Length: 146
Length: 146
Image 1 (tube, each protein chain N blue to C red):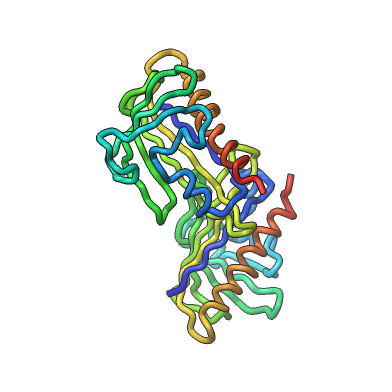
Image 2 (tube, one colour):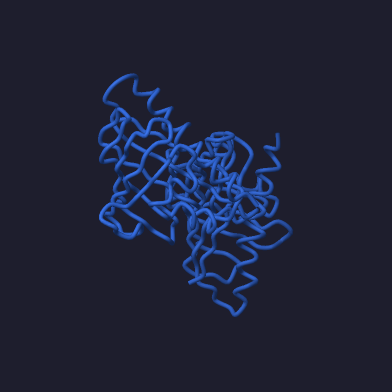
């Protein structure tokens, strides 16, 4: 079991950031690594238990992830991976967006715990932390910065 | 019930900030609003249950607060007011630090819940949120300015 945690300050209000990332079907709108997304079975994207089916830009690789929890008051969501091209198993992740009252920015956190099924675990963890999580924060900042 | 939530970015690594604020008997050392402090009964200031007895600078009166919880893992402590010149009842507050991995900074979140026992809720909120918590983050950030 390995754990990844990344956090950053995004120069936009937490309400604006949350409005963007709350959409479990919205990754292609903001994440630079993601090409397409749909919610299986035509369910609403804020229905806990729904599954998003999305593809990576780099290789068209398919991922399926299930929404495990969603909370608007704490601006927090969690999900797990059902299918992924990455060498991971038992993958569960979450993100949370907290207002910085002094200045109006957002404290963004994204974490995951999982097992690595092949290759050096730390390099897979770093890859996810830097190229998925931190790259995602940076992209949100570029879209919304005030 | 009145709730206070104040958060800020402190431009220093979390372990440095935690080292400065962890000592429950150290408030006057870094917060300009307070002077003189001792822990009652000569207890160690990281002994959960201990009571700090300190003054509001400039003759503003004495406050006694009990340490309810201290966690080095969560970088957090929680405490309640036993005696205070502030018109509050059932006052419980918590300071938690979070690491900002992008840029190696710290986010501080300071919350409190209490009932106001006079009719000046705005004045009490100002004294807690702005003069105490907000000021604390301001001076911490200034102390570590790099």
